[in-house]
Length: 403
Ligand SMILES: *[C@@H]1O[C@H](CO)[C@@H](O)[C@H](O)[C@H]1NC(C)=O
Ligand SMILES: *[C@@H]1O[C@H](CO)[C@@H](O)[C@H](O)[C@H]1NC(C)=O
Image (cartoon, rainbow, N blue to C red; front, side):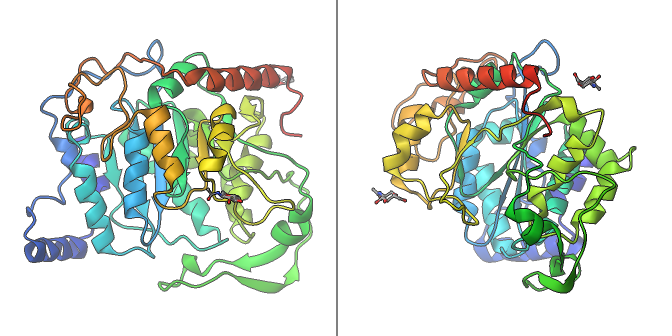
């Protein structure tokens, strides 16, 4: 693991390291802060994962310029020592912002001890509507697969998302879920997307231009493919480890062929995993048709869902979703989620059964810990359990799968 860690954490090129040292000198920071903080594990308790233990999750949290504080808040809200986290500030953010994120992350005692959070030091572009987004997600999956052999599901989040349940709740409810199932909202009914997103040929300049620019459209359109069927759906996914190995290692050519095809499609992250999974005989039976997210859309839908606020709190809680989007920075409703559901203090991680410290305004209960492999669901897990139960019934009936 040691050598791989170094590679990942990263990810900082030699030039970037010099820059960091330069910055650290200016700001008087410790000159060792670009080292993997994962190497300090003085008080970590033993983490048990795999079959027979509660499931663990690998989170990919992406953001851009000006979103470091929100990414950090989201990390605290979804943090658990048994999980793994990878944070990515895309190329429109600055190296100063990345260093700031590393500093924030390092300030959390449990993160320092368990070493389960990494920040990508060599960022990728995130072109609006372009295919570079799929490349970043696949890269994140590849890093997480390489770094950590213990997680069961990969969850994509962005800086405007927030959880509606604790990690103890999530892991508890997912304990009864077969670990090869994939939660991915999908349909082959493309509607307006056929004409506006699949047939138009676009090129994402993020693939070859260093500066930020928008995708451009070719004048010709292409016919619909007949070598495979196109599926679309929510870009927010919860995917199994085995399916991501299939996509990343590529022993079957399908994931690679579709990746090449969708390079030239608008918003390929709304098509890629959906089409790969539904065209694969091996994996199509593992799809649960839901993204586990709470969103409120206009009709007809705009590019992004509504900003949620305190008026939506009750509906959010009752939705049985695991996560919600999207939120304005530090909206009051996030404080409500922290206080009522997560019971999370300012700048502290969401407490769980693993936290053993005293809880008061000056003492963080999660600055000390005991056995991290036990769970204590909150009073809010029931709705989520119910909705997962319904989804699993739905999955068994196969009535709503890859159609
Ligand atoms: C998937 O489900 C179909 C329909 O029940 C079944 O015929 C097929 O054998 C299943 N495939 C796999 C790989 O389990
Ligand atoms: C919450 O959002 C809704 C619709 O997006 C808006 O009508 C309402 O005024 C907002 N409420 C608050 C308290 O901001």
